[in-house]
Image (tube, rainbow, N blue to C red; front, side, top):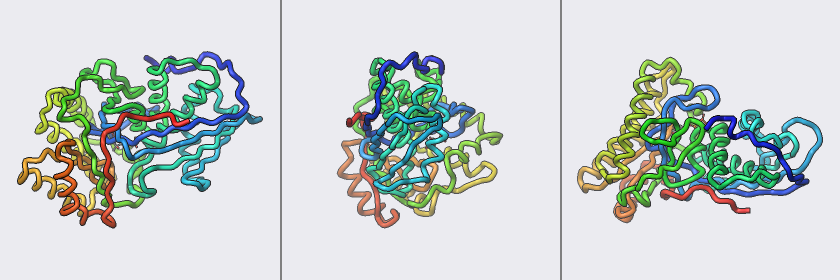
Length: 359
Ligand code: DP6
């Protein structure tokens, strides 16, 4: 498929005012997206678990207006929020060719997250995917007739133009984004569901998000991705992501937990290694991030657990583990890891099925 496939033909309905509502989850990458080209094209493929509890709920009310400028208001958790406007303005500019009605309506975007505000959890994946899905529903109300499959594909395509990782939040439970040989229908333009048979070992996986640092991100993802331009290790890293994804595909099918842990933890540390070795360089882990990692390694060593960690571009730690170990791991988190979390906060999440229309 190409970009042109997402340009709608003609709109038939004439709606004065209506509203749509979606909830969309966050996701956690196992093979990381880090580095992108023009138009939100990833430098390497990535794969993520779609989450279940960490989500954004967005209601979009659209009303016919005069004039040709974009017009929208953002209401975040009940209050008008100007801080999100530039990101949404950029998003509208990027997607207007695919949503020709954007200049015909005023949009009231009412949005909230189920996870605490300023928890250091990136809301761009859930937020941008929820908004993309709302806009797809508007397009449908205005007369576009799409199959569910194409609807999701275009929602993912639009979400990508808002934030790369957002394109992996439309569906569950595992989504691949970025063209790569080992996944036949993979694309740089949108996320595709991982359709191989996932071994029972990796079904219903759990993710406890330990909030080590709830502050503003030290490095925005826009700045972070740019650090890969001219990075000494970039081309090797991009190659490695293809290899890791190909092997992870096999592992997800054959249930090899040892290799799963090795690939996932290595991906997390590689992401941070890229940031530590870029110019300018950053250390996004905090002392407590390392304490937690060491505790996880000790616990795994002494109990034979299949617990492992992954990281985003920040200090928080995602603790991944099989459903069967839930009780044991939460006991461990409460007794050993909570002490390293800011105000003892952590979020219990698990793999989910993707976004849902609410109204
Ligand atoms: C470290 O999707 O936030 O979480 O496309 O600039 O919005 P933009 O970047 P973003 O980058 C996320 C990077 C990551 C790894 C991942 O989710 O794959």
